[in-house]
Length: 200
Picture 1 (cartoon, rainbow, N blue to C red):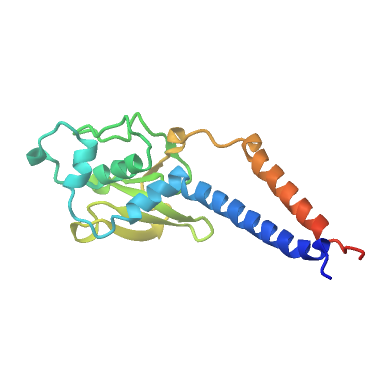
Picture 2 (spheres, rainbow, N blue to C red; picture 1 turned 90 degrees about the vertical axis):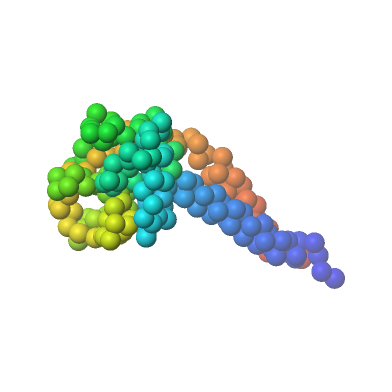
């Protein structure tokens, strides 16, 4: 006759597996909610887009659409920040832009930062960095063909990088992870006990 103890390992494995999946999903959701990732995702989602009015309407409110500036790379960059819930209190200032006085420069870029080129006063969103190769992946508003386009180039090619670090919410503390860790230990510990031989 099959004892209750003999079927517990199967039940325990199911519980442990479900807990592992749940914890994995929770951490994946946390990662996807990272503001820097959100900025990059917003930029990448627009590759190929050509309608600058979408970006100007967001960053230059109460401004006649017939007077939107012809160059819109900076508007696109600020729009991407807004889509990530960052810099929502910052709007584009005609003739000045939005970087100066709002974002500090950075020695090394991180995903979500804004690359700036003196040539044409071009702005681009950093969506990837390879520190080993010394390259940076950018998404450019008003890029190739007048569309949002992607590019990869030397990290030292842009004139400067502007950091969004000061716009980010406070990082979770170690204590905020304790419930997850404690729950995992309890579930895994119970599973290990159930897997012990029944002795029957």
